[in-house]
Image (cartoon, rainbow, N blue to C red; front, side, top):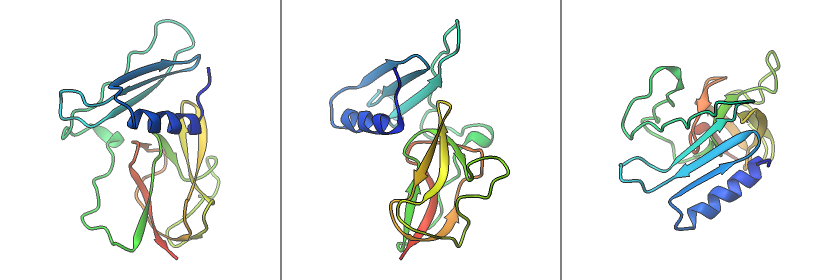
Length: 165
């Protein structure tokens, strides 16, 4: 069973509209666990773990409790103190690793100050060994890039801010 980016997005949207509290889905090369509305104050959790080639199976990665600081560079950057109202955020549609270019040594898709148009790729998110180009949904100028190259990102994390226009 294969699960691509669009199918994952549709599945999460359907789950958001349902009463389902927990879902586990396994394919040949992936395992997806979604939990929400658990007794702890933690927000909805999506954990994706690459399935191994052979035994033993990987255990799910536990979500950090709300308010707990994650160790090392895998912690998402703190939110900006003030966000200008004229900026639109480009957010991560999935959990993955953020890459600014299509390959090591290649030029980044965008830089601060770059003019972009709707549908233009702005980065790559690697999830489950798949490289997913993230296209901007609006036109404008890149004002901030908030994530370092090669950094893990969370679903909904702001990756960059665009001044529309």
